[in-house]
Length: 235
Image (cartoon, rainbow, N blue to C red; front, side, top):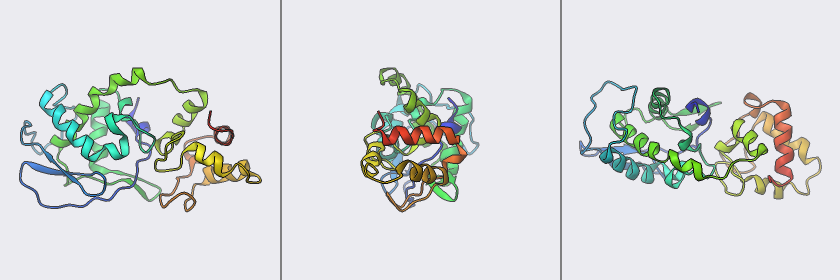
C-alpha cells in the first residue's frame, strides 16, 4: 500500500525544542518531545538515505520501540495498532518507495488545507532516529494477519480516508462513528446536513481540529453511502 494514501491526515500536535546531549535527539509525542538515545546506532552522516539501513537490526529495533512508544503511540496506537487517530502504519509496504516517503513525511510533516496534522521534524530528529522507528514499525506488519477483516462499508471508509481520524467506537482526531450516530439520532434532515458537512468540511462541533472537505477524496455517491451507514449505527 502506498504511504501517500496511508498518511492522508495526521493529528495536530505541538512541537517544542530544547538542547540535549550529542547522542540524544528530540522526537515528538504527547506534548513535549521526548529524548531518543541514538548513541548505540551506526552514524549515517548528513546525506539522507533512500532505504532503511537498520532493517532487521536488533539494536535499532529496540531503540525504535522505545522511541515509538514514547512519541508516536499517542497518535498511531500502542504496538502500532491504530485506534483511528492516525493511519495504521502496519499497512506500509516494506520497500524503497515507502522507506523514502516515510523519511520525507517525518521530516516535512503533513499540512492539508492550511491545517497542520503532523509537524515537520526537520532539524529536530535526524535520520538515525527516524530509521530506528521505521525498523520497529516493520516488525509489526505481520500482526495485521490477526486483525478482523473490514466489512464493505468499513473498506469504503478506509479508502476514502475516514479512518485516519475516525474509528467505530473510539474517539480519535474526530468523533467515533457511533457517537455521531447518537448525536444525530433525533436530528431532522440529519442525512442531508451530514452530507453537506462531510462534503465541504468544517469544524467547531466536535473540537478544534477542522475536518477537511471530503469531496477531494470521495465521490458524492460514496459520501452519501458512508453517511447513511454512520447514521444507521456504523455496523
